[in-house]
Image 1 (cartoon, rainbow, N blue to C red):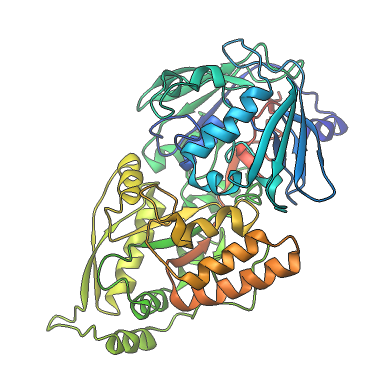
Image 2 (cartoon, helix red, strand yellow):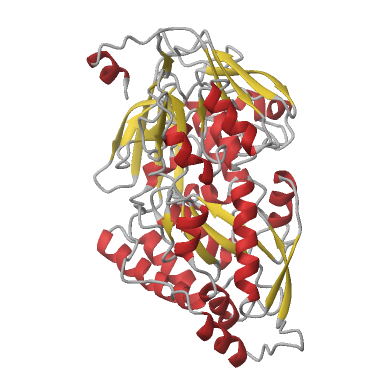
Length: 511
């Protein structure tokens, strides 16, 4: 519900109140760009902003850019910035900060952003409130990069000349958002408070936000049931608890607000570890998994089975291109053909597996995967780690199998390509950490990236999906739709296609 909608229903936005919510798991840091794990994105999007945000149909909405123009040839983008925007340290935000954020901060830190921003031929500031970006060639989804979780605007003054990963401001983030960082008691809470010099007059409505760190899933459920917190999001509530919370008269359960991200989960495969480099083995592992069971019995109907590497809610998904279904018999035959014979105990191979440390549902998923692999003679040995260690080990290729999910950002060039092109095989989390390489797939993603015509892009993406479905570089599991659960007194929670990742400057507590 937007403010206008609230007013239409006779609900006046009320200034005041602290939003109590939860952050699961506790992130290692809260500086966007330096860390892009899910919990960081949730909390830091209240402190940082970008030029735009997006509607549920991915239409751009002004944020730090009050307007923009695109040239007829699709190469030049001119952004007019909002007046009187200040960083939390009181210094004004100008076009220089925007250009620094795009051309240096994110270019250095974010492989996904670098791949897009390398297309920029020149970035200039005709005046302090105007940014002109000229591309080397047209790139149709370019505007989709200017959302806060993809390209937050940082202070040039605080980062220039520093190591971006270790600059002092990383520990005490400074953005332009409606809430400023105040305190972080590790293992307990993160506290944000209203930024009194925020550029929107009279906003934010809330006095502050407290993100509580609550490791136990049942304690998190109890907190939202009893009103100790007014909102949970993303991984906070286990899917098996959602049906009961839907019955609570004081609560609203929403699964909207993920349209921009379209998160898709998979079993992460390190191709450097034998026998995982053999596509027959990966295909067999994929066929051993019952995705309907995962969706219906583990996620309780929140989300849907994945059918290929591009989520059905992302542009250029081809409904005709599907992974092979659940078929244990054929999977065993594939492993026989690959020469992976079972020993006397029926074991063909033993692999280490790191469950995703984001809550009990992910532990249950890994237990299910272990059972599924056992049906085809593959033994998974579990290794438990915390969220920071998980990110480090995946990024350093120090794993054999795990579970991962990534965001697709509205277009395969922005959020899918990065996992499969050989040019993005890096020791950085959320790149092609699996080490998959196919020159033809590289060519197709490049063709889709370069084509200005949507029909040409669809053709290239469809051909890429066909090859990936055949070779199964990662074992796709579920199209995720995390629940946002909030007290009905909390207004304007989900109003865009980025859901809880907006700044919350118009969120208010009524009554």
